[in-house]
Length: 193
Image (cartoon, rainbow, N blue to C red; front, side):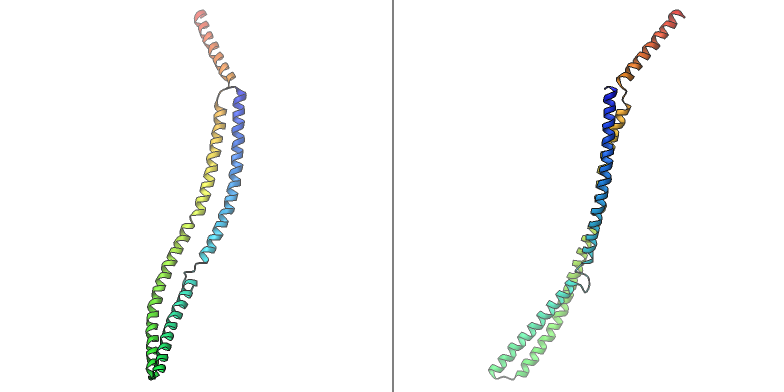
């Protein structure tokens, strides 16, 4: 390889290294922005957890359970009282039966709410696990981008360094001539010495 070719390889490696460095800085800056956006969205997701105590899940579930139990007791009571009126029976018994159903439904409601609370806690644990898993993603993104650019820059720098270390044709010719002159001088000393 001639000195001009080595210089060209050196300059190409140097230009590529500068380009990779610039790309690395640009990519890192953009990655930081993207990671910041991701972290903001993750914080919003975390804050919007519907499974916290008193949150959307618990409120909606408790309302549905209470409304269903109340409606079932009222419906059954109305049916009993309507039947008692139609058949001419005493409606007081129907009222007592309705009250008894309401009490039983209240007891059932406590058990159903306890089950719903267990579901809410399990849902919250799953939701929080998702948040926890997602918090590792920004670090992985940053490490990946900076690692890729560092590897590319290192490769270009290696090419640049190798080109600078390779002796030119003139260097090799000069070293060969110097060695030959040294051998001639040594032979001359032996001969005339």
